[in-house]
Length: 501
Image (cartoon, rainbow, N blue to C red; front, side, top):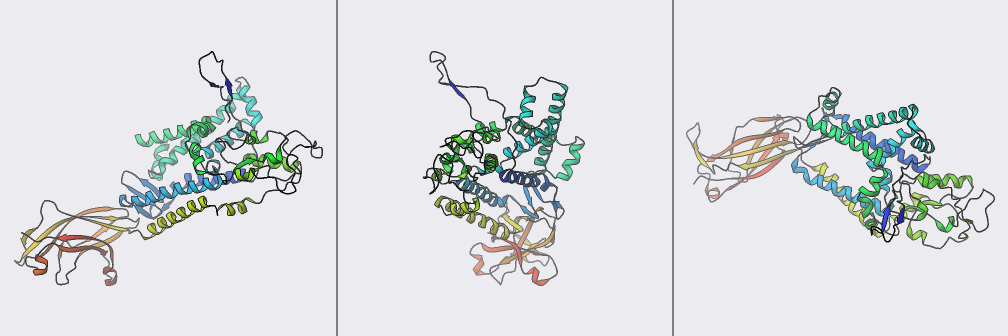
């Protein structure tokens, strides 16, 4: 929404400008290909947000960010703190995707997938069902409080609150098992933190999507401010073509005044805009590239039997070019519909900035996919006991042994249970370190186990090893009876064995 400005009395307070009170924006409903794309993405994003916490894989919630246990469950895979690098890479890939989309099509993320846009569209749909279309809502705003107004406003807010609370519950369900959280919420038995976040996020949804709406995009969201650094004159954005539309004026289908452009000044493009701007004033930071003004203008052009594209996804470079051959500037005559958007996007991919962002995004996504595919599902972390470097003990046969103590952490980084056995392997084939206790470890899915192990060697293992620490490797092997499986380590860790002094 554009904020009207007015000059102050120069002998007044000394302020140069004063903002007039903002008016409530009631966007008009419009149907078209961009509106259908927005609706499809609304369904897709909310199906993921509301539905994924209810999915289960292998007895566990498919996606669960268990912060207390420091475990991220992702469709059977379990990410532990050692996998933080993959989370970092995911954030980098998300940032590169945002840069790539912005360099290609401006604020297309804002118009089609941003949560603020999605929930504002959802709340506006509820408002339209309860109070009517744009004119009906404006009349209801101006009307005094009656039983009809109270009934309509009450139904709207009741539905808004229900959606907001369900949204808060769904958000917490990504961090707390949903099949435990939902029954607890229905009986008001949720914990203090769960209750706080359900109510906090529900209140934020109700306030942002129900009342603030476009003000979040205009005054609170930082993305609208730094998008200029990500765009250039070739980036596609929703734009009005003044070469074809100006001078604007009202006219019928077959009664165009001489020298008049295609724009009939119907203001439908302003009425359908969620932020209330006039796209005919040029590229503006308040434009979220939703394309609804394109749908509105296309319907008018169809009625006038004029080619579509007076408002379209275009670029500053294209609008600065001379009119196409055969098209008369300022008359609206001789113009043809623009090339299909997919073809123009394919051409835009060859731009250096877009190609750079796309190449970095592809490399980052490939590294992330390969890394997650090859990540170990079992981890070993070995630390020597700090209190005792080495000690001599006598075994059951009366032989003197040198013993080292180790603290071993075994992490099952998968959702499936498994049984493993720890085996110590020396680089010297003549040395056979004895491990105690020598027993299998049964690990549940995503379980972490810490055990204390003792490794022992004869007190005189040989001159090659007596001069310093012995390099050893600790292997975790499948505890099955299959000999081949037991020879293949599932995980390994390097350590050393010290002689007694």
